[in-house]
Length: 59
Image (cartoon, rainbow, N blue to C red; front, side):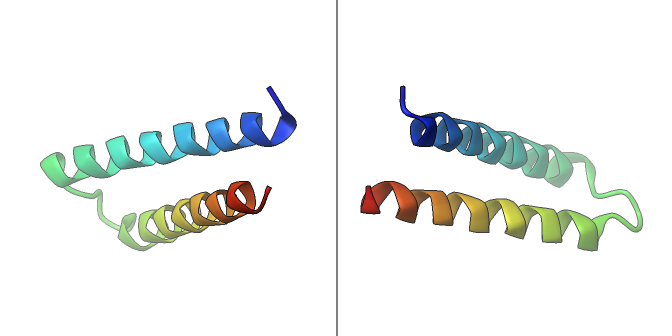
């Protein structure tokens, strides 16, 4: 497995974990004061996944 593949796999795992967290929070609600930081984290993970997808396509 190449280094890029390993990084891509980790990013996908992080993305799946983030999706699981978001689904759980939708069920039980977001604790007061955590809405904005969670949105920023979710957006950062999405950006990272998008960049990794572009990098893999270029390779």
